Image (cartoon, rainbow, N blue to C red; front, side, top):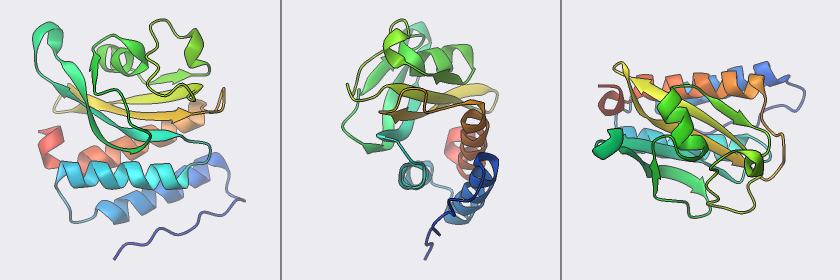
Length: 170
């Protein structure tokens, strides 16, 4: 059985994300089910990263106007279920295929307030098979919680998740 080790406080941020990536790789090893892997990825991130109040996935479902993001496995308070492409931080990340680091969500045009305690957000698009398949979303009650090092570290975690999950990347 996988057991996450406590990450030392002395690690710098890139070192922290390297160790967390190793843990995620070990956690997902041998499992190909994308729902199980999304659930475990969200749980590991939520329990390992400080100052989070939400960590989880939205997956792109086909439909009019390119589809919409639909809530997937997560950790935290109940969340918005459907998000239109281009709307809010998650919809913007999916529509632009670019990670979004938002220091103050209240200043983000069109921000969707699923949890009023959230103050900053990091959203990484999930790109599989040449298309957007969803986003990995992290929220924090701390303004300015995320930076470029977090963006790079979480992008690597998203890559590990995608590589482990056949159905999502296909």
